[in-house]
Length: 370
Image 1 (tube, rainbow, N blue to C red):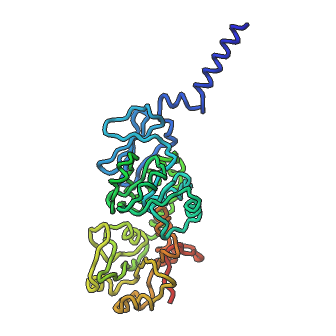
Image 2: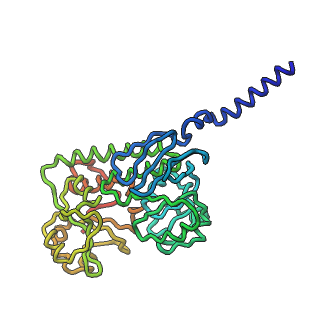
Image 3: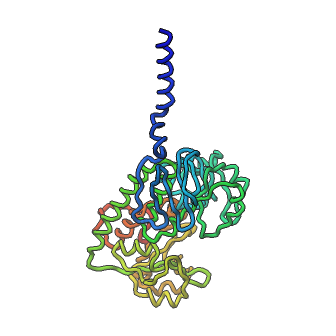
């Protein structure tokens, strides 16, 4: 009898060890952290593949990460091993932070660069409570605060101002997040899948992105059928030059997808600086003028004229067709990177109001009041 009891105890112990969390058998064969397959459709800055139960993520041409559920997993040569899901990280940009916001994962963020133009009450409260620390801006990081955040990885924007050498010395893995380089609005939003893989929310990221994609493409298809496409230009004069987004920029693509033609029709992907005369030659007769700024108070046509007397020469000014967003009044950079469908709808509501609901209330952009 004692022998039988002893054998039963051994069997129970074995089952407890083998079935712990219900996933040990799976872990022996596959990466337990892979909760859902990730397919990249629009983003060009990262690629994903599975190899022997390990998720391999390539970022750009030079950075390669192997996402594993245990430290003993073998990874291919040239890949940096990252145990996932991560518990703590630092976000260097609002775009990165937007990925965590839409995935309901603020608890994973323990450090940010600052709180300028930050509206999210939960993030602000976490900063106030000390759960999130401010590490300073790119190029001038507070290394002590970086260490205090105790991140598993740090998401960076390597081709911006940089200044990552001091934090490299901490030994913390730096993970490039290249969402800001995407030229397709859906490609930029698709980086939520990238973050989802690191925090164990692949399934949620896939579902959220599928909704964004569907709403964007359905409205884009409607706008593509319009008979008349208005023209639009962008930017303002600052310090003697006019800064406008390039013809291949993601914003220019949103204009086109919203059924309008952007007056800057070149191959530039970022921003460009023009003399006033150059912009006037391109946009004097344009139907609409898009402006994004951080004006203190209520922006107006009078304020626009006061900033540059010649602004009143544009037809869009004369006809009161200025499309405006104030970053001090809306969380534009904080959340719009993962809401290209909302941005698109704001523009469609202005360019082709018959394509949206009559009671649609714009979220970011609206026609500037007279």
